[in-house]
Structure formats: C-alpha cells, structure tokens
Image 1 (cartoon, rainbow, N blue to C red):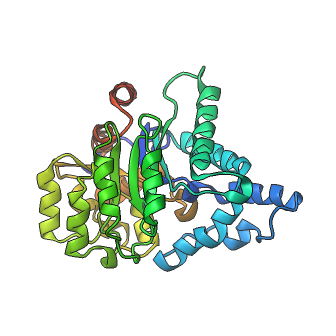
Image 2 (image 1 turned 180 degrees about the vertical axis):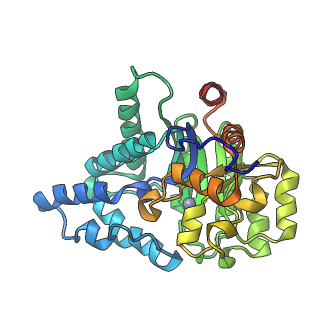
Image 3 (image 1 turned 90 degrees about the horizontal axis):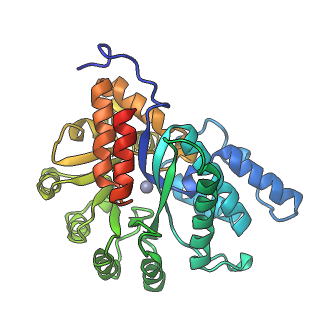
Length: 348
Ligand SMILES: [Zn+2]
C-alpha cells in the first residue's frame, strides 16, 4: 500500500520507540548554548559558543569530523554534574515533545576528576536526572516517556575501563551494553571476553555498532561481533550476502537503522531512497527499529525519520504502525514495559 492511499499520519503524535540514541549526541545546540552561557558567566569555560562551533543548519558531519566534535568540544563543555543533569533533562524533554514514549539512551561512562566524578558517579548523575524527570511526570496521564539506560564501551577502551563499564551494567538499573566508537579504530581482542561475560549477566541486553563503515566490516570483525550473540545491531551498512543470511537465520535480531545519520554522514549512497532500510523492513525474521543516533548533530528527530520512510519507501499508515509495534519485541526494558507499550501502541 502506498502512502498516497493512506490518511496522512501525524508522525509527532504517533507514539514511538527510540532504541539507538547517544546521550551526548542528542543534546540540542540550543541546550549546549545555554550550558555555555552559564559556564561563561561563571568563568568556567574558554570554549567558543556552540552555535559557532556547530552552526545551526549544519548537519553534514562525516566520520572524520563527527568524533572530534565530541572529544574536543562537547565532552569539554558537558563536564560536571550540573551540566550532565541540565543536558540530560533537556534531551528527555526533546524526545518526549517528539512523541517518544520509550527511550533507551546510551552513554559511555567517563570519569570527570576535575568535577569530582568517577565513572560510576557519572552514571549515577544521569540516572538521577532520568529519575527526576520521571518523578516530575508521575501524575501525568499515559502515554508518557519512560527512559532506560544502556552503557557503551568505546572501541578505544582499555581493558580496565571496559571491565569497569561492564561492572556498572547492573539490571534493571542499566538495561543494556553497547559497543560504540570510531569504526576506523581496530576492534581490540580484549573486548571479546568482556562481551562474552556481559552475555552471562541475567537481564542485560546487548547491542553493538555493526558494519558501520568498510573499515569495520571485515569478515573477521563481523564474525567476532556475531559470536558475542548481540540482541540488536546498530547501522548494519556494509554487510555482504553471507552475513545478511546469518542475521536472518538467527531470527528476531533487532536492527537499529539510522537513516538521516547515515545519509548526512555520507555512509550510504543514493540518499534516503538508497538506504538499506529498503532491503530490511519487509524481512519478517528481523525487527527494524528506526533510530536517530545523534539528533543534536544530524538534526532529524524520530518523527521525521518515520516521515522519511513513508515518503521514500511508500509505507502507509498500517505499515508505519506495524513497524513501531514490532519494535516492542526488541526493547531491553522488560516484560512489564513491553506490556505498557503494547497498550499504548494498540490504543493509539
Ligand atoms: Zn550510534
């Protein structure tokens, strides 16, 4: 069914699930600007205004310019408990305003010694902000946003940090573990035993950034990542027929597909219409979940990702709703949360 035959959907009002969103990359430029203004007034930063560093309307960050944006700018601006709280609350408000009812936010724990925060303290600060948001919304009627946290291990992580991150992944406080980071960094052998150990933690989901670029898509790396038995795969761009078949054969694997991110970063060819969403969304054995990755950088909220697939791949109302509902199968938030989401998404 083409979208011309279907009634137009209000993609913002449509209750949605977001499963691949990085906390630091989801902060709006306006919010970063507000943090900068407060720090500037307090004499706490020498960084330049984020609205100059990341001009409004600039979204074409590629793999070469994307990672330095964090290491040399955002991490230096959002570097204490107060700015973590402020930015996390802002990110949650933005997702809620876009109609997201369930969010799995991911972040890479980092110690902020100058602010007196250990890596564990960093995670606690974010969990506290999520709890604060949900407390403030407690009396509001459904559907409303519920947020769970995934901890990421960067490909660059040394063994001690990777092990520490795993030790912080205690369900249900943390619902999942992720492998992220610059795909041009080779996958270190010491990560495999850590992810095998993660697989043995009851109730802990696993997702990995998978085949994001040619340099991270060798047969060896993809075989290793699949040997970790991840529940979900992020991006899934550079896969050949054999890997594709293996993913299908596993059955029920979640595919976190990030259209605007991949198009803006030049990771796929042929624009949105050329995105591999077109190859996957009808594959019954997998679960495609549209995701934003870094809405603060790439500028396309989740509602727009749904509008894009309706426009470029001809999904009608029924297909869009089926896509969102199928995503419930691969959330890490547990059976009670799945039941809440089914109720919201079938009644919406
Ligand atoms: Zn990502």
